Image 1 (cartoon, rainbow, N blue to C red):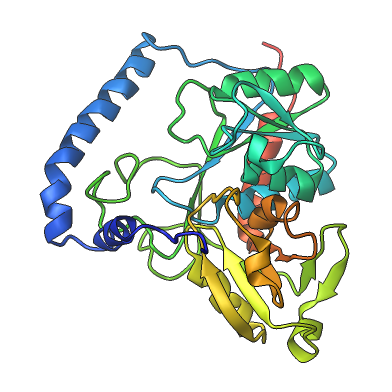
Image 2 (tube, rainbow, N blue to C red):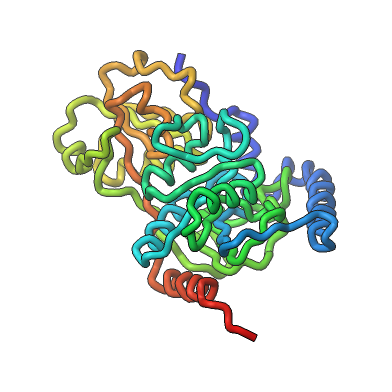
Length: 340
C-alpha cells in the first residue's frame, strides 16, 4: 500500500484558512483563546519573568508568521551561500522538526536525516555550513559556537516565535497564501497577530497585499544523484530512461509537480506525501520500473531506500534590492563596536 497522503481533515482546514467562511468563524472563539495565551507569553518575556538569552554573535531569524511551509528553507540556503561568498563564517541552528534523536545534536553527513531532521540535513548537505539542532535554540547556538568558535553569525531556520533566543535581525518568508484569512490558529494560519514588525519581508506569488521584497521560487535546471552528480533536466525530458514518478513530502506537493511539468518533464505518476514524511513505511519495490524524482528535502531520507532516486533543488532567487538591504543590516551587525 502506498503511504497515505495528507488527511482529509487537514486539507479541509487548509482550505478554510484561505477565507473567512463558516468553519473559520466557528473556530474563531478558539483563536481568541490562542491570542490570549501568546499575548501572556510575550508579556512574560517582555517583563523578564521569562528570560531571553543572548549568544556571543549576531543571530538572524528566518521564519514564518503562518503555519505550514512557505519556502523558508531555500531562503536559508540562499542566505548562507551568500554570506559564504562574502567570506563571512556562518552557522545554522534549528529545532529539527520530526527528528528521532532528542537533545542537542550536530548535523553531519554521517547522521541519517531522520535523526536530525530533513531540513537541517539538507542545509548542511547543500552548504557545508555547521548546523546544530536542539529543542531550545539557544542550546543549539551555544553548542555550535563551542564547536566552531570562529563563527561570525548564526542563522536560525524558523524561530520567530521562539522568544527565549535574542535575535538581531528578523526575516519573514511568505508564499502566495500571504496571511490567509488573517485569523489566528486554529481559525486561520497565523501563528501570531499580523501585522507585526519584521526587518525584512520576503514574499513569493502575487496574493500578499503587504509590502516586501518579491522573491522567485524556481527549480534548478538539473537533478542531483546521491553521489552529487548532476543530470540536466532537458536530458530527462528528451531521453527518459524510465517513466518518471514524482513524489513530494512538502506542504504543497502539487506546486513541485507543476514546476517539473513546466520544465518539460512528463510525469507518468505523482505521489503526494504528508509534510516531513519519514519514509519508514515506504517500499521502493512498489514502484519498480519507475525513475523516482523528488525534492532534495525528501531525497536525504529517500536515498538510503532508493539510491537511484533523483532530487531537483528548489532555489530561492532574491532581487538585488533585497540583497542590498540584507547586506546593509549584516554589515551593521558585524561592524566593530565604537568605544565610548
